[in-house]
Image (cartoon, rainbow over all chains, first blue to last red; front, side, top):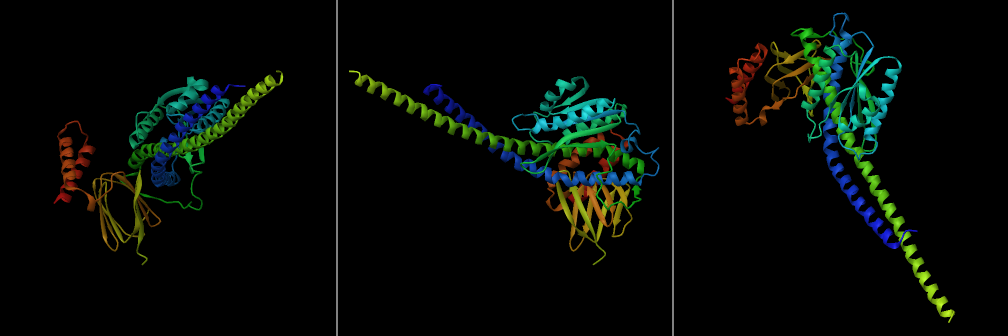
Length: 292
Length: 129
């Protein structure tokens, strides 16, 4: 049985933890609104861009000569996985969920005897992944000192992906991130960006456009494809930023509530042992008086 | 009226415009291009210039680059630099012109960059008048 003083100290420390989690929740809530807004506003751009690319994929008649970035190398041996996570912890299962999904995929890729390369974005994911797959990680990015994610960061990652592709380091590229559904739900997602996946296509939209290109097809594709990669990375970063704040908010809300419950429990314990010690004292006095 | 089509201007951080239009003039990479409804599917790039949207009223946007797609009577402009001319500050324009002109003096620039920069200056000067 802990002494009264010990209990008092514990109650105090739980209360101050509660204050911290409460403050973190407030901060996350304020940041969430901004992050959510930019994630939602950014969605149309990346979606439309993806749609153009997919329409282009369909209109290609001669896959042999099409740009490799669009149709892939035709092989399926080397994989590049880009895992996007946060730079900060204390946000519930946010980072672990992405890593869990990524690791299941890694296992599958490796068990099929394929080559695996990993790029991590965000230091938390890097920490979790390097434990098991450290030798596969070829590059890590961290935007810890950036306050807001801008397109430049996405471009940095995009350029790295493209230069690796040009060096023939991989055949397929998959990115992992958390899709922001709402404040409580974030869905870890794997998206294949090279070659562009055609199964995401909106149903009933399978007319075959034959586009008119100006200047010409090659030039357009040459410019558009790298841009699309960066755009998709940017979207993932935005979704991630919103998810992180959402996830942190819920996690901190739960922590605050748990701390409250704990304080209640400890207070009951405290009162009970205080009562017990009073009773004990009384008994001692009474039995002392009786024996006289 | 059936001679209308929808136009969307979308930048990475927001949807700038989504409305019906009768005619849109875009500064495509190889020259001005007027688009009416039932245009054939088209993909092209933008060079610096002014997008003019003609509906009941006329709207003008300054752009530096972008991708244009037209299909199913829907004109989609993806750009990160669209600015509504009505809110374009004059001193900002002069600053931009100076920046581009100093770029032109640099001998390192490629022909393509030179081409884009000169169009940029031309357009900006035109707006400034």
